[in-house]
Amino acid sequence: MDKQSNEYQSGLISALTHIDIAQHIALDDASKTKGDDGQDLMSDAKSFEKAFSYLKDLQQLTHGTAQERAIHALDREQIVKMANLTRPLPTGQHVSLLKPTDSQLDLAAIVHNLNNLTRFGGSAQYINRKPYTVAHHLLTGFLIINRDIPRDGTPPVSDLNKYWLAHDMQEGSLGFDMIRPHKDLFKILAGWDIFKYIEDIHSAAIHKKLGLQWPVPQDVAAQVKEIDDICCVSEGMYLLTNTPTDLNVKAEPVDSEFFNELMEYQNQMEVYTLSRHLFVCFEKMFPEAFKDLMPVLGFDSATTFKIIADQAGANFEVQNV
Image (cartoon, rainbow, N blue to C red; front, side, top):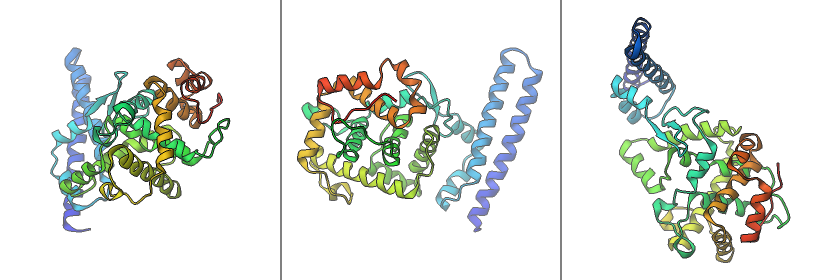
């Protein structure tokens, strides 16, 4: 272990010690104090507890020296603040940005968010200048994966289908789709892949909630990346008139006729129906995680696909799980 790593570990141990002491002092004071002041002290103790847990996680990391120096420079107040940063979902539920819990991850709200996040940093539009969202992206990839399924068939419950639908869900949890150039910029400025670290925290929690492995098995991850690159280059070329070189993606787009069919298919659906379509795809692939959500949302697979068939002529049907 080099000198910087030793300093980093020493800094973490020191911070852990001070936060642990502060937590126990706050708990002791809270137990002796009544009323609102006691509740405030208990809240402080819980904040210290979260910060302590966060730092323990950091202690296990072995990233580059730039990250080590950055975390070593944090004082206790900053660490406590980081541990308490949250963002609201449409339901009003708050999700921790650094320690999202299973109960905080509202799947319905996360999928809903995907339909409000426009691809390519807000630049992607398709027919009639409609926003092309992360929800469109997931459906496009899902239809590409299952393009050989006959109209009266059912997409298979496969690892590729499951992991494809899950691969961008952290964007619904975090609340935005950070484009690749921005990720590269933050990586250069920070000296390490800081945004991937945050994304991975949310991805890991969401995959666990869906009953999926994290990290994603390498063979499936490679397949998902291949579909993602095909979608990216197809969307970039046909929606933004970019080239594969502009996008820095080594993939061939789907043929323009097929892509236009996919866009027309999605254009025929109202926004609400598009969301329902995506929910049904998730319900089919993750029946346990979504079985209680569909009745609450007020629709089911059969009803949804009848509406889709009426509006667009569905490419495939999904039976009730």
